[in-house]
Image (cartoon, rainbow over all chains, first blue to last red; front, side, top):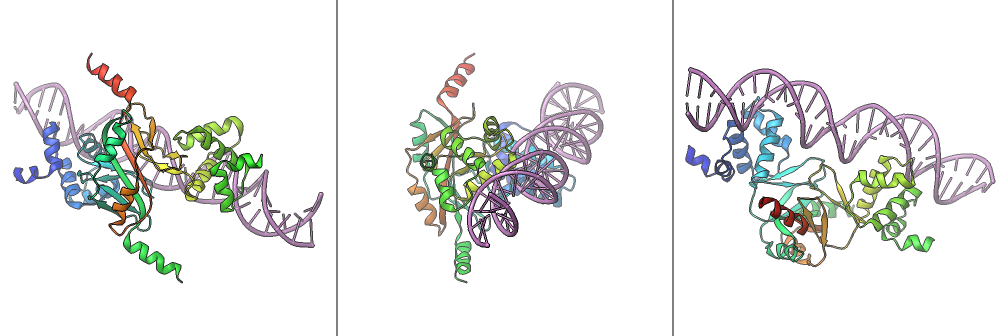
Length: 150
Length: 150
DNA sequence: AGTAAGATTGGAATGGTTCTAAAAAGAGAA
DNA sequence: TTCTCTTTTTAGAACCATTCCAATCTTACT
């Protein structure tokens, strides 16, 4: 079982950092890793309540902050609703945010090194780079096209 | 004077869109255009109060939303404090956000077309692309280096 | 087991943003 | 100009995500 947990990079990361592996942290890390979504804190909390009915929203915030601090997940802001979203996928990629349905697609094809190089050329010490593209996903673009023909 | 105002792309954009050019909107547009900063709503409001002591914060929000809707300015999220920042500069560039002092530097050297092409390859209809790089500016990197040697 | 540091909890406090109703200002017609 | 209608501004309340807090519970270690 311990081996199974350690195959989760979020749990492994917390272990390596020497923080306590509490039941709450493990549950959140497991769910984040398997969800493959870009959830808000509230969505994480709602999911947790099914398995862990007493988990506090503060714990969700604490754990998400911890994971961000350990560089195991990333924050993804500026979606239409006013709440922060979290990115469990740690490999660099472009986030394609659909203005229609709010879905976030991941585009792993783009190489970020040119971006980092450009920043470094301004004597800027790069920690991480994030690219967000706003627009319409295929489904919403089709639907919007239909509406405009009415 | 009207010519002078029209040299401001934000004012010109509002004119072209056919919205009313009120004193408040002009004042905000002028300040945004000349500031060259990445201000929060509250900073815009504070600046406005010097010239327009009765301007409401709601008007600042309304005007900023209008300018975003008209694609004349852009939102820049995810700075450490929990408030939205606005980008008056409309030419595409990378935002270099310093984790030390919070300053946002603009890097105009990078060409965004590759990013848009990568998104388009996923059948995504691109509206705009934004790149944010987190790290340390030259001053903060030097200072942090000094501290770590203490 | 005992202990001390760290984590969780629930509720209150904070603060950015949005909403609302009423007053003010703009645009157009007579 | 003056009247009228629409849009905008205003001030403050409401909203909601996030943070803070004190008390309680866990964990890791001896």
